[in-house]
Amino acid sequence: MASVKARSVLLQIPCLFFGHKTLYVTSLREPSIRRASSLASDTQGQPSATNSNNKLPVIPQSRESPNGTTTNSASADDIFQQELQGMNKTTLNGLKISNYPRSQRRFIDQERCKRRAEGNTAAANKQVPKPPPTFTASNGTSGTSIAVLGPSCSNDDTSSKHTEESPKIWYMFPEHHKLVVQLAPGVRFTDSDVDGAHEWQTNICGTFRCSKKTCGNKWGSGIVATVIRGYLFPEKDLAYNAKVFNQRCKECDSLGYMTISRHTYLGRVIRRLKIWRNEKVDQLRHENYWTGPHKSELCEGCKAGKCGREGG
Image (cartoon, rainbow, N blue to C red; front, side):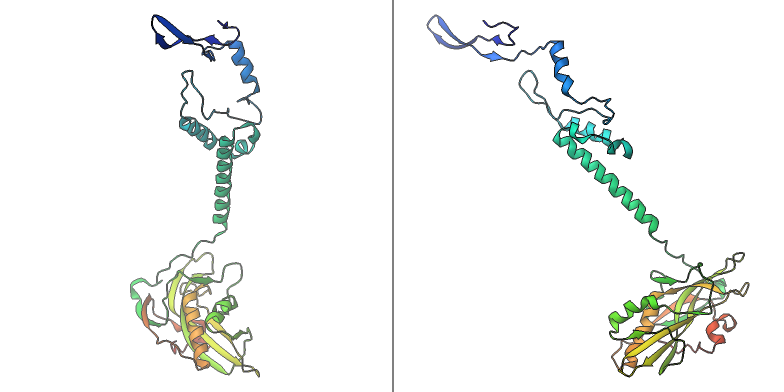
C-alpha cells in the first residue's frame, strides 16, 4: 500500500464477488487534506491584495471541491464587479491587468470603458448651451391675440444675439443661409445694406431681454419687423438678405437682446424667394401668438418706416 507521504492512498473497492472471494482494484487519489506548508507554497505565485498595482485580490472563477464537484462562479464574479464599481478612477486605471485571469480582465476593461463613457458624456453636457427661457408678454392681461402668418412661433428653434456684443438697431442672420438653400437652391446671401430689385416687409416671432443690467425686463413679440430684399445679378442669379429690427424696453427705453424664432425666419425668407422666382408656394396658415400690443415708439422697424406688416 502506498504511503500518505507519497501523496497517494490506496483505495480498496469491491468490484466483483466470486464465490467466497472478493476481487479488489486499487485507485490512486489526491488526498483531501493538504499540509499547511504545501498551501503556503502554492499561494506564493498568486497576486497579493496589497500589491501596489492592485487594490483587490484575484477571486477564483471556479474551484473543484474535494468530493469532485465544481463551485458556482457567479457569486465570485458579482463580488469582483462590486469591488471594481467601488473604486475611484485613479485606482481602477492603476490595476495591473496581467495579474488577473482572462474573465476578470474583461470585467476590468468593461468598468474602465464605462468610466470613460461617463466622463465624455459629462464633458459634452457642459458644452451644450442651455435653451433660451420662455418669456411672457411684459404687459400681462393687456395683451391682444395677433394673427401671425406662416409657421409656428414656438421657441423650440431659436437664434440669438447674445450679450457678448452691444445691442444694435437691426441684425442679419447669415448663419441660416445653408438652411435656406436647401429649400431654395441657387440663391446667394449678401450682407449689402442697400435697396435691391425686390423688397418685402413682413414680421417674425421673437423674444427680448433688456440690455440694461439694472433693468432685467423681458418681453415677447409676434411682430418683429423684418425686411427681405432681393438682388438680381447679370447671370440671373438671385441674391437676398433679411434685415430684422430690434425693439426697446418699455421700462427704460434701452435696446433689447433679441432671440428670434428660426422657424418663422426661414419660413418667411424661403416663401418670398420662391415667389420672386415664380415658383409654387404653399398657402399661408394663420396662428395666434399671445403678445402685448405692438408699440410703434418701441419698434426700430416702425421708426425706419419698415414695419408695414404686409404678412408672409
